[in-house]
Image 1 (cartoon, helix red, strand yellow):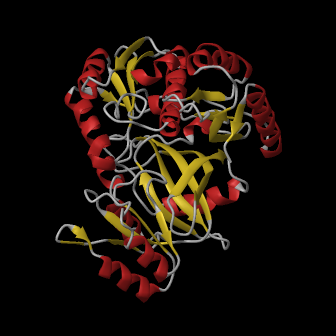
Image 2 (cartoon, one colour):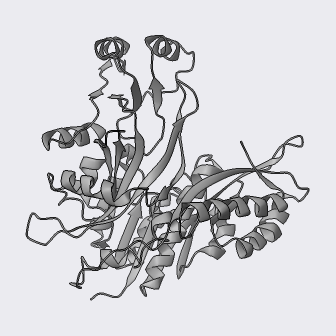
Image 3 (tube, helix red, strand yellow):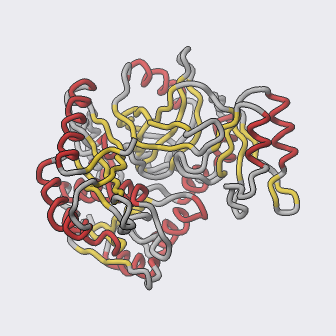
Length: 437
């Protein structure tokens, strides 16, 4: 087998936004995934290579890496990316699908002839398009919400089409980017009047350079399944490992406001029963093009129907919790694609809640003092902190500093996780970090 050195690239923390301002909340999720997967590859005896946005250089101390490159605001992050690729035999890419980012980065890695542990081009091409994914689910007789691509008229969104479909259906709809990621830029509308108010805003919060879909809103529980697939070479056959089924904390700020994603927990209650229903659905389809780690978002209704929403052709945030509840390092299953090991038996050995916390600092220390003193102390005291509190800018004199962090509990059940979460909040409070309501 080739030398085991791997380049792990996570787009947000790795400099993908190096030339623009970015929120601490977005960076903290990306960093949490980067830190977690680097740790797990190191446990498998890989030499690890990665890159990091210089704005969070202070977090490099917590990364289990052998070779780190920083991305400054003056760099082309792709130049750094290619240099890191040249050092590695394998790569694992975590990047958003929008603007073809994940596809382009994967294509570059394949052109450099690197062994790919993340999803390949055909899987990305399908999963990156919500319309193609909708057609895929429909063609395979899976339940999926009614979905339309919103047409453009003279380069602008066709409002008449949206009103027409809304009146025809008489049920709530959501509008979201055709190539969107997670809960990004999703808008919910229950009544026609809400649509009219939304589209008559002076500053319409829709990107004119992106395509959008109109999708039926299904009332139910937001869930996702995390899968590693090692299809048998030269055969159109799947070898799926369901790692876990996860609850997702997704909601809306108001009736026509943006959605938000804060995290979730794993495994869900009634895991065994839902898994059986899910497996019957997955038996209908071929996921041969999704070799590696990926996720599927779906909604479970009160009568146990599963509505499939989208396929995420990449590692998702839920991995941060999943790695805490399995009897094996989940990345061992990725290696089986290269080494013909005997199949592993996957078992759950606990419960994990994973979530982002937005915090406000009420103490008197400067940002520099917090970074150099308070945060290292918190990291020693709270092992569940995957991403310590981070803040990308100083507050004005009349404002307190705002931070974001990411935690993942590791406990025996839901109740003990809640108890530990309460203890963590108290520890943060004693350090003058209070949860923003």
